[in-house]
Length: 464
Image (cartoon, rainbow, N blue to C red; front, side):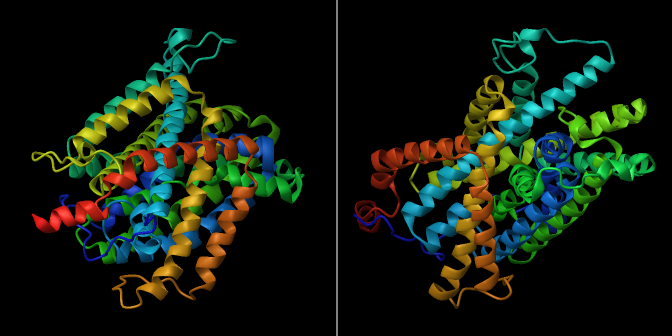
């Protein structure tokens, strides 16, 4: 059994419509990153893990992401096909690890979308309540026998609406995303401009109430806030000049978002004592705390727009990932069928949307974020090592972007990701291993035999 058969870069096919440029990619990156992390996770991370030192948690998580972004940029410019880290691993390490990583990314994008839609639902219901409207309790949240919730109806509806938008075509999706990105950046700027006048430096004392371990735990938690830039590489086949535009989109979007996270976390913990931030809408809450209710309402609108774009990019990444895996034969070929009208994989788009709608409707948010974190960190770790492997295995490969100081930078990236993984809780590790175990069973039963690299299929193709 050849479990480590590798896919040739030259044989990587491109079938999707090339319509995206560097600005589209940067907007998609900002759209993916600025969302639940800044509007929801900041409060929990400050109250339970880092306190005012949340800013250091963002810096630490940002360093790990910058190192990983450099690695992603090199591989995305070298192997410009759908599939992101899955496709890179197929070339660098072979089929088994590629499948493991692809299955891991299915978890990352799917659970991230479900978690974000839960946060979106919370802000949307808060906005409705501002107009005196209230959803029935049974329809307001995932199943919880203690408070009487049964299904999170708003989360299901937004997932299905975004699925419909994605099925319309990538250009329409990018245009909608750009509009929403402008709205949420304006709202973040509004929070900074309004909130800075209410900062009380005494709220930053004690600065590190949970010690450095709290900062690290906070970094592992807020890592969720950075998830999304890697999804850009799943769009590689739809980029006009991937060797140039993908690195620009990945690095520029991450730089903009890291700066905003640091500024917002400083202002947030300066306005409100960190112990009071364990709420579902910390950014809006901070402005209500200083009696700026009108601006707080506008922040809620921006948060809804922000999380909408995150959902858009997460679902986009998920569908392109399944498209790539299916095209390689490791999942049923029907998932890689492309609509002749829109040039998008509509079947996989609706399957993904339906499954995530069910997940987000019934699973609480607090059980989702760390599963996404561990899956993403694992993907980043493998991508970092993939840069080193391809430098030695394929030195002649055309690279539109090159990571500096190889192997030092990729090794630092891998080490940072491993360190953050070790600071996640036991439940995240148990869920992660159970998911990978299911994936290995699927590969053994279906993927290995139906792979396009299976010798029997290759011989059949050559004979035809």
